[in-house]
Length: 276
Image (cartoon, rainbow, N blue to C red; front, side, top):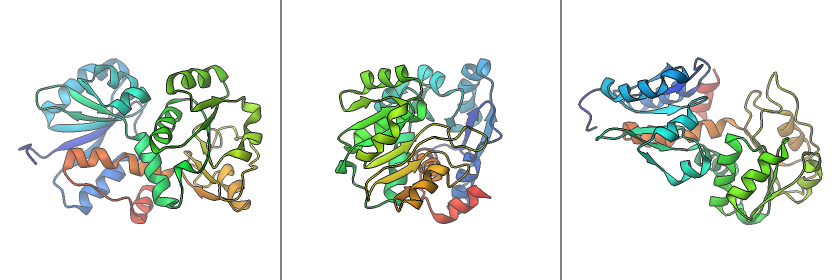
């Protein structure tokens, strides 16, 4: 490491006590015997701009940002990666030697690499994807699917206008459908992705009936519970499924590599550590 001090990184949010990122990075630091630390940083929105400028002076080489700071971090960045610009939010920051920071968004990478690890036979070009939700996670998923070569994306959101705005932004491969049409739309979907909070513990259920053809893949970004009703329904119908925890793990890889100089692996042991 070029930094003469023990490198520090962390995750910035408000609140932040719920974050699993310290477990992920702490496990990798111990696994690779790296003299570094990764800590949770609870910073209120009003203090974010001032505090982000102070972190490099304290030895921080980078940070993750989560709600509610993702958009603000993008606005303040000295450099922005193309994917972060397209997604419209940042989650991974790297402090620059001459001041300021580079903002990236690794959520889309995390999503795709989770599919590729846990559904290695998945073929992006096989057919349309049905994406539920047009929030921040939905934007990252859209970017990643288009980048991977999915030929067509059917997009539905409970507020249709938000989906239509994303379709205008992301281009002609996005087709918007009504929320009441999602069950019927699964008939042509080779991939179904839930990016909403529906089906999460203490949240309303996701009301959908899967009519997918054999060979379709179903994934849910929700991982509390690990097997959501959507994934259980898919499994009951003999469809392949991928849970949402892997996206969280895989999105952490690029940041760790940038900050600590080692590219870590997402393993079953890591999953067990995070779930404790």
